[in-house]
Figure 1 (tube, rainbow, N blue to C red):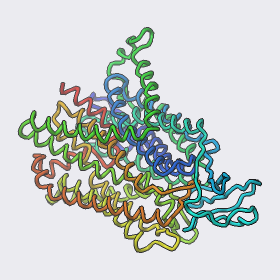
Figure 2: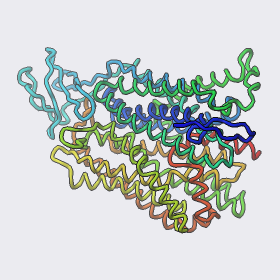
Figure 3: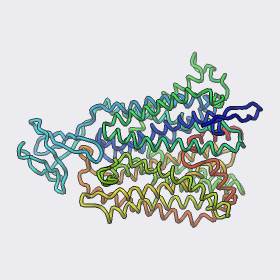
Figure 4: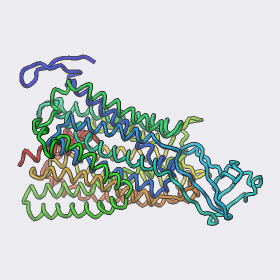
Length: 612
């Protein structure tokens, strides 16, 4: 790595690293560690909920959906707060502090919940040993003896039952299970998730805004800078799902979550250390305004922080009430989409109306894509844990949490290939249009689930486990679908929206992501099975449930994708941009995946302010 100096717009030479501003290194490392913490925690969350706190499948997947939905809503407020008052540096710092607290809070696991089965007029505690697919159950006898137990097709089978005067088999339907949770540690869990949600709101909305600020508007290095920044995102997620998943499953949940917290702390320290390298681009827009008193001796800056902390209370409430989040989003989001469509149709004319309608239609189709894609953190993780043979070769195995690394690995390997392919096709004038890419993305995410169904139907073993290769192929198709759809999705909003409502449209895009996570939770709940001690009672029935749900959503994804492909000529015309102009403009700003998304609210709000 060598440092050079290039002239700035004011004529002064500024040092660079590999031709890019030195601040890019700071932001790369900050975001890498932030994504390390975020995806490390995500890889363990549903397993933690079902195996440590013994939430039922429906409860755990609903909680995960509420958490993920709120994570995508929070950056809208965080971006606006930074744009108007705080500036990106202060917003990212407070967000990182909240994230550090939240991730370390997740490491306080306590002793976990207790599960009991009642039969024969008595109550027996079920004691679990281990985590992941190697989890084993024991039943504690009245004398305190631990007897191994497992589930057969007939019910609960108890080894050496006669020695304790217990039946060898407790028939299905003749016992009742119940869970006793430790309310203190459950509330620590919910509060930690609330800290993470608010922290993400401040950090994700603003860090890539600083990346963009390091470059002049027409600086040819800008796209390359975002590409480097984006690689930090995937490097962080790639490493965390391997390391946090390994520690959490092999040694204990607190180790996995603790490592995620260490990663976020490293990101915060890196960001604070590198402030001088950001060249003042992340400062508040009007520093003096932050010192203005708004309530007695409390100035505007501290008022914003107090409001952020106050928001922890409603977020803490909502993360426990996924049904409220679900109802609000499934009713409210479609009404907002409909209102914007009607406004565009009746209040706009010509090219503006056409472009806005196309942007809204593609946004609605993106909801389905992310609904299916985001099964990764919930139903696909539990499927990997329960019904997948996680053997790679010989005695070498991975665990269910680590399977989420497939997506990041494929992104790193395939994104450059796809980018080169689009460029070559563009030079020949045959690059697919944005609507075609949306359709291809939907078809591929649907095919990913149909591949899983093939594995379940034809290759499941007598133990109801499916070879890992089928999950590997499903993630491959999901990732290629993501590469088709994600790079141009968000930037499409800035290009096609009417300038005076681009900030509102960006909020609608994030609302669509929140809605997608809520709908993903409803699908994940449909895959739920009965569990005792975090172990599925009937693996065969569970596998059949996965086959049924995955088949249904797979065909829906493929079918809707085909509809989008059929509509693509009309949608392309409605964009009023030729393929080269549209896709190169969109992809150049967006990059692939999150690098565009994380800075969108702030940049969009700024555009909206300038238009006004």
